[in-house]
Amino acid sequence: MVSPLLSRESSSTRSLRPSGLDTLAPLGRVSLGKVRSGDGMPKLVGGRQRVVDDGQGLTIDEYCGNVATSEDRISIAHVHISAPTSEPWLTLGYDEWMCCLKGRMVLLFDDGKSSIEVQAGQTVFIAKGERFKPEFPDGGTEYIPVALPAFRPDRCIREDGPDSQVTQKLQALHGNRANKVEVDAPLRGRKYGR
Image (tube, rainbow, N blue to C red; front, side):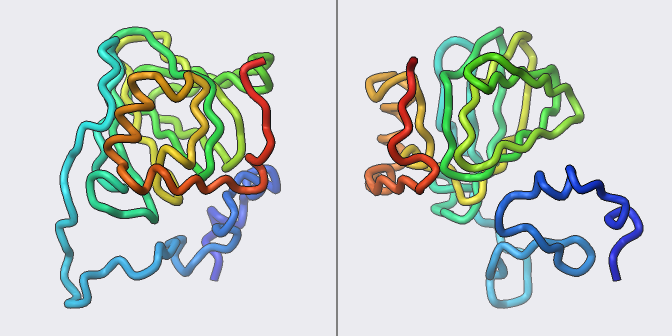
């Protein structure tokens, strides 16, 4: 039985679903595989790990993922922006949802010719293979990024270069996992930094 709310989805809403989530499980739940501890009880899996502090107002604390919980299926983090800043152009090797809690963010795409503003209380979806540039025009912005599969440096092309402080810290935190270089077909051979 399909929920009446789900049956009212437009075709454009359905087309925004990431690959692998084309069909809804009963009651709208999506299975992430075996997540139970096996004894039928909730399981504490980890805690907050600071993975980025750029020294200019951007911090990222991972709650679930390769660093915080050694989990490669999903990553969940909390990003704080205390002063206006931006990230470099990014191309993701995973699907990501960015849930804006406070403030706002502007995502540039189409080589900067287009943008979308995401305000507090809104969520934006970035599909695997999309190139975008997040900008944070206001201090006090917070958001929750959720990535499937989990974030790893080799799954995210950052156009700030391999020598940037953030890139080096992410490589160090992710250790050997960061050296696996998994480049999927949509990312192969793409040229950036025009």
